[in-house]
Image (tube, rainbow, N blue to C red):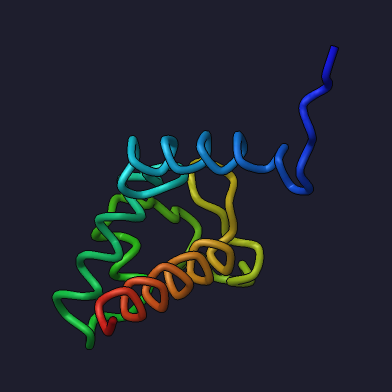
Length: 104
């Protein structure tokens, strides 16, 4: 009885097949994202002069304590408990990603 000869990297062919079929199914990998953040990104792209906080508000994020006296902006959180800084950074990251995507 003859044993079939195994070639190096033979095991990787199946992984490549699986990966290629997975990419054909989805156009954009990953989660679709928060619809509020998507709306904030769209608002900022449509009006680049719009301040970041206003873009977030246009998207639907609510920061109740943002204008309260004595409250530091670093302590302000939205209804989900996420800080203004985190939301702003996420918006900036998404804007960079979108600009990079449209340049190509």
